[in-house]
Image (cartoon, rainbow, N blue to C red; front, top):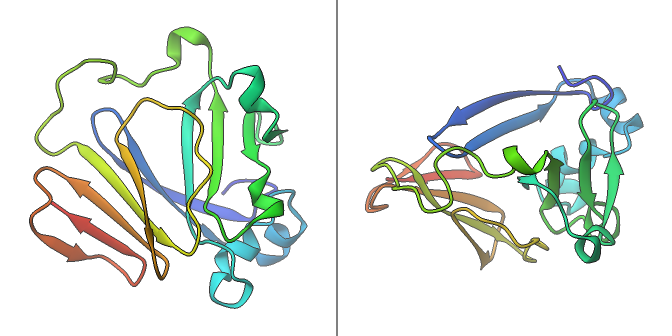
Length: 168
């Protein structure tokens, strides 16, 4: 459980990336939290995007102006101001790490493994506000909320839920 957020999670790991599935477990705690993840959990009623995209690293001074610091969980996490100002956009955050740990294992010129995450397609009414990053392509597709994970050759599709499709 993430104290102060009212959420739980599970992670799906690749060699250099991971997908974190997050859900509200305690609506009262989520409603009282600074991130207001209750609004994203109730996306069909609130219009907020049910998705978020997180990065590891450090923001430069110019980019940092578009974010606010959330440190209630311990580590420094920079939350894009769209979370409050334009919640119809996916939540974007950066987990601040020291320079030596900035890029996850396997990035920056390393060979991709056959089943690695190659691309994220974030469907929704508005594209996320992304900082510069190293990693798989993140593409916006206009339409109803849906997240497509492209791994391997991406030829076959499997619908995992109403909001998640895995293409491998």
